[in-house]
Amino acid sequence: MKYITTTQLRTKSKELVQALRDGESVTLVHRSQQVGTIQPHQEDPEYKTVDVEELKAAVRDLDLELPDSLEEQDAMYRGEMVRKHGAYLSRR
Image (cartoon, rainbow, N blue to C red; front, top):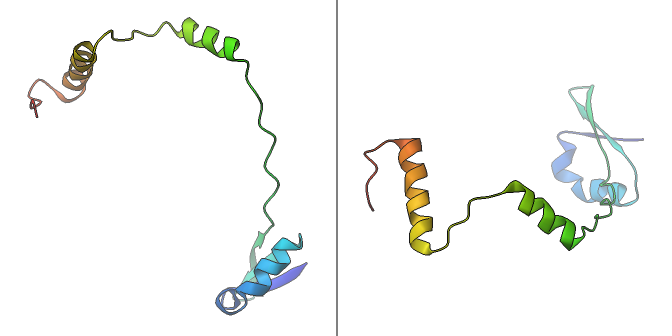
């Protein structure tokens, strides 16, 4: 394992990056004390694919109240804002 001090972070950043690219962990030292370990980034986990029909069924199970028009959506939004912030909410 390699060591790097906090003052060397500015001057030896290229070496630090190269060590991380090589898969090495580097110990960070501050005032002669080990304060942490800098480790290389792990590979991203594989993404799980979702069946579209399962997703649609999950949304249907939520039973959301969806507005039919823009005016209805505005009324629902305004009602929530009045409930949250009070009756003295301005009209823009």
